[in-house]
Image: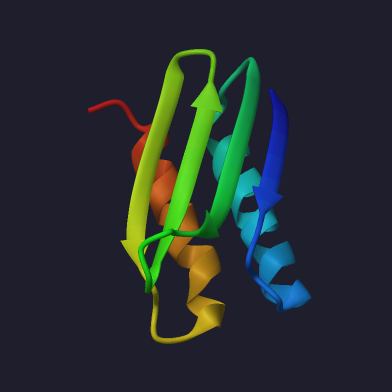
Length: 88
């Protein structure tokens, strides 16, 4: 799997790196092939975050409410990505 992870809008470098690490872990655990791009950013809608996933099978987009603490973002995005990569 070729993976590009872009995290925007997270000023705490430790949290941004943890988001990337969690996303990479989810991608390894789901054993996907092909080129993948995952984008994390604050939403245009105040108080929300966006997750964009682009891969060989198409695109997935989801928005989530801002967690109470910024250090909850890595788990939030890991769970959202797992949902996006798991077939319904």
